[in-house]
Length: 309
Length: 309
Image (cartoon, rainbow over all chains, first blue to last red; front, side):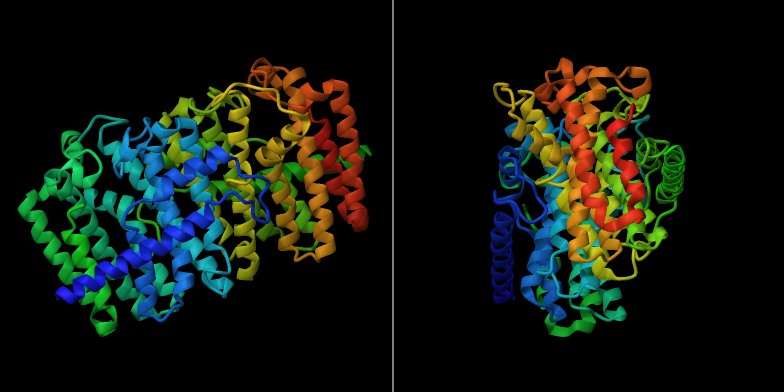
C-alpha cells in the first residue's frame, strides 16, 4: 500500500505540474485568433487567481478517469485545465466582499485584496469564459461531438442548477436573504452536491466522455464521482472544525463560527467519519468493474477522504 | 423606403418576441438533465435580468445574417438567445457598485438594486454559463462542429481579449487604477471594439457560421459586423450627449460627466456624424455581394446609426 501511496502522490504532482504549464500558456499575453487585445492588468490578475494554486484535484480526477478508458493524456490535460479555470473563477467570485468576504486564499491575498473588487469580478468572468474557449479546442479531442458534449456538461455542472446555484443556496442558508433556519440533512446534501459535488462529478464524467466509455461504465463513473464529491465536502468540513490555519492556508473554524450548514454539524465528527468510510466503500463498489486499471481512482477516494489540507 | 422601414421594424419586433419566448423557457423553474435544483431566488433574479428587455439587437443580427445564408430560423433564434444571455450577464455585472454603479437599466432597478450584490454576481455568472449550455444544444444546429465553432467564437468575443477585456480598459480609462489620461483615437477604437464591437460582430459571424457561408462571404460579414459595431458605439455616445433620460431609460450625460473616452469627445458631434455616414457606406460595400437578400442588414445598419434610444 505504501508503494501505492507514493505512486498516487507522484501522479497527483505530475498532473498538477502539467496543468500549471498549460494554464501559464493559456494566460499568456499574446492574443489568439478572435481576440483584439489582452489588457495586462486583467492578465496579471487572472494569473494571480489561477497559477501556483492548489492540488489541481479536479484536473487529476479528469485525467486519471480518462486514462482508465484509454483516452489520450494530452487532450485530458487540456480539458482538465479548462475545468480548473472554472474552479478558479468560482473561488475569486466567492471570496468577494459581497459574497464570503475572504482576504486569504491558499495563504495569499485573494484577487480583490491584491487588486480590487472590479478587477476580481472581471477576472472571474474572463476565467469562466476562457474555460469554454479551451474546452472547445481541437487539442481536447479531435471529434467535435465529444468537445460539445464536454462544453454542455461543464455548463450544466457549473451554472444555475449546479455550482452557481449551490453558492446561492449557501448564502441563503447563512440567513442572508431571509430569517436563518437550520437546514435538514437532505437540504445540506443538495447544497453541497451543487456547490462542490457537481464539478468533482463532472471531472470524472469528462474523463469517461473523452474515453468514449459505454453507458454502463458511465453509470459507474457517475456513482464514483458522486461518492467522492460528498467525501470531499465532508473532509473539508471536518478540516474546518479540526484543522489549523497554517496547514489550510486559510482561516479555520470560520464556517463553524458562521453556523454554516454542514454534515459535520448535522452528524457530529464521529458520524461524519463513519459517513466517509461508507463513501469509500461506495466508491470502491462503483469502481469494481474496472479492475486494477482503476487503482489510482481508489487511491484518490482515500486521499480525498483522509486529506489534512 | 417607408415600406422598407416598416418591414425592418416588424422583423426586429418579431425576433424580439421569439427571443423573449425562448428566454422564458430557458429560465423556467424545472431542472434539466445534469442539473440538481434551480434555486428560486436565483431564477427570479435571472429573469429580472434577461426578460422584458431591450430591442434584442444582437439576436436580430444573428437571425437575419443566418437568413441571408439560408440557415434554419429556429436554430438561429436559439443561438441568438444564447448570445443575448451573454449580453444580459454583462449588463448585470457592469451595473454593480464595484463597476459602473448604475441603479437604473431599461427604466427598471438594476439586479443588485432589486435584489443584492451577491445575487447580482451569481446572476451574471449563471447567465454566462447558461449561454454556453444553450449554444451547445442540438436545437442550435445538427452538426456538432458548427455548435462547437459557435461556442469557441462566442468565448473569444466575450472574454479576456473581447468584451470582459474591454470593460477592464474602460475602467482603466476612467483613472480607476492609475492616473487618468486622455486616450487617443486608436485606443478608444480598441476599447470599443472589445467592449461592444466584439459581441455585435460575433452576432453576424454566428449567422454566417450557422449558414455555413464560404470564406469570402465570411470576410464580408466580418467587414459588415465591424462597421456596424463601431456605428453602434458612436450612436450610443451621441445619445449620451444628446439624448434624454426618458427615451433612454437610463441617466443621460453620465459618460460625458465622467469624462469617459468616446469618439464623440475625440471627433466632436459633427465629426462623429460624418463617421457614422462613412460606416454606413462601408457596411453597404461589405454587403454588396449578397444583393437584395441583404436588404434587411442594410436597413439594420441605418437603424443602428440613426437610433434615438
